[in-house]
Image 1 (cartoon, rainbow, N blue to C red):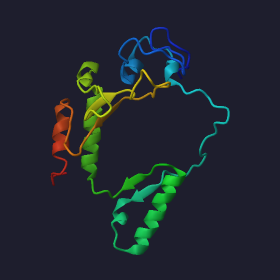
Image 2: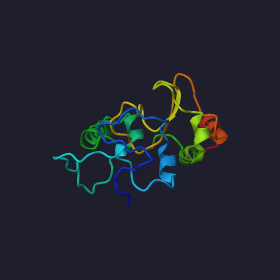
Image 3: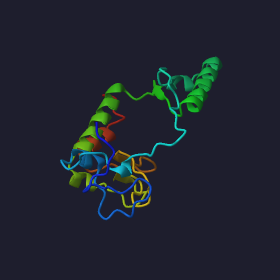
Image 4: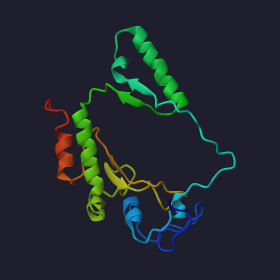
Length: 186
């Protein structure tokens, strides 16, 4: 397992006080695949807080909400699922949705094209690099690395779908799957 000591050549600024980054921040994928990486750069580690305890030691599964019950005309079913939804938000802050009307094949195809996107080269993904937080397509590691005190160990792709449909150019399969999402063939 990697330690959290700073690396000399890779973003080794201290966790809470780092100057503006002198160069473009590499994607987490590129950083993690770098032969120079021997530990997680300190800018990606959260300092331990004195009273930090796990929120939950529960072995309970993530709450599951049956979306079809939210549109039920049976008031008892509807009321029960609303209570479960409230409990999931209150106790967990998130939940898993089932019976949302999206076919399993479509979900798997979308996951696959997203995987293809993140497997592209840094240069290809850079075509989607956001300049502003409200850009309709944005591939980034963090929202504003020069201002954030701690960076998240993640890369993300944000695409607006409303009011206009925005998609990355690459991979071409991303556009195809997204544009055919409503096809009956799924």
